[in-house]
View 1 (cartoon, rainbow, N blue to C red):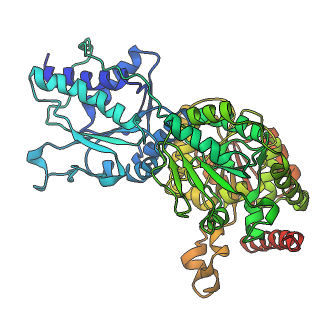
View 2 (tube, rainbow, N blue to C red):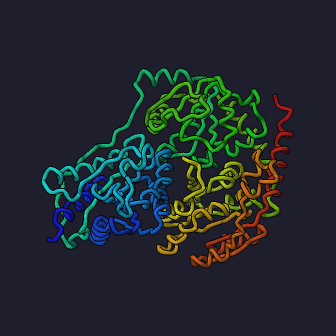
View 3 (cartoon, rainbow, N blue to C red):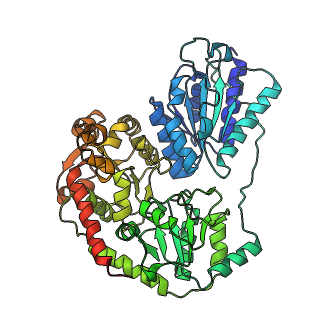
Length: 561
């Protein structure tokens, strides 16, 4: 063999990742990553359970891997060449760190003698991602010896286990490589010693559980479910809410709307009122999931003085309202199951009060008669197939979904709510679409512009994703913010119209396209499974529409104590 040490150690690295559950790889091609890329490709060809995706744009690749790891709740590996290619992963890693998504980043690098000495395509990759990863480790794949070989097999496994340990998050393995870079193909991978780590859960001590149940007995308990990071506890939370008649304010990304004691569209209530009517005021609040989309809800929470329990081993006091008084750092599913077993049925009056208000809110929502940004969400809620997946862009789309999506069918909703950015949205949704089935993306024109390269993955791998673009020619959300008053500068600095010809964008990536201007056209385009649907909107009209709706709700609820 011409390159024995590099070949066998790279196989040990790959085997370690696979042994701990990394079965999907996303590679951004380059020269320095040649041995890793080739041996991963060879392994994928030999093992049908493995999957390989190639994305030439590193920023898109990282968000694509994020989408797979996020929706499948599994670790996914990324591979890139040296230099600024590795730096392009940073935005997605920041998102993964905040939302506890396990990405395994393999950055290939120039060797030490070519670093900081003027060599091309070389930057300092040591601790490149700083605090955006849980751990950064260098592995020497070309160093001979049994000790190093064993360390590579062990460390690659430990890296995945570190990424999966609570709180989950991304890790980096930096791989400095010297030429020659071509590995030997057709070599049987060496056997490695695998590490077994049984799944463990974190439970409350029995005395703490008894005390908690006592604190909740006979109280008006308000449950809040933020965006979920783990679907395992969803059904048990719903069951506890129903048994105890505790209202459950479900974020659109909690994937609970339309069921049981769930209160949908509550953001509208908190927009219309800064305080709750006495009939809705809780004695105790329990929060699950990550930070809710609703800023008015978080503002209301900041004003509360009642006990607030923040649940979950991954939460780490992640509460910018600073309303938390108790942290229950336990496994959500286990804690909910234990409460479900010990809590008796509670009085239903408090839940009935919330349901009455929810119904009043629903009756004030305009029945769709014309196509706009609000009614687009209502149409998606009504027409998207059950069990489909909807990825939602940040900025206006997620806020409109939060307000106007009620959950008329059981679907899975996703959004990048860690860093709340609009970059990488198309690529993340494409990663979601690797699951197959019916997949949809709701996105604005600026977010689409940020990540048009992500469309290539849809074309390359024929991924099933219907894209609905709300085209208001710019940043619609800025019209709702104070800087809208700076009229002399607003369009250039904040409105930022790009005047995109979306028909040409769709044609470039070979997507079927239709521009729709009426509800009927939009519904027909969805039913005909058009791949790229453009919904035209005007920012000024959208601002006035939202203001009228909130004004109507304020008037409806103004007389309540």
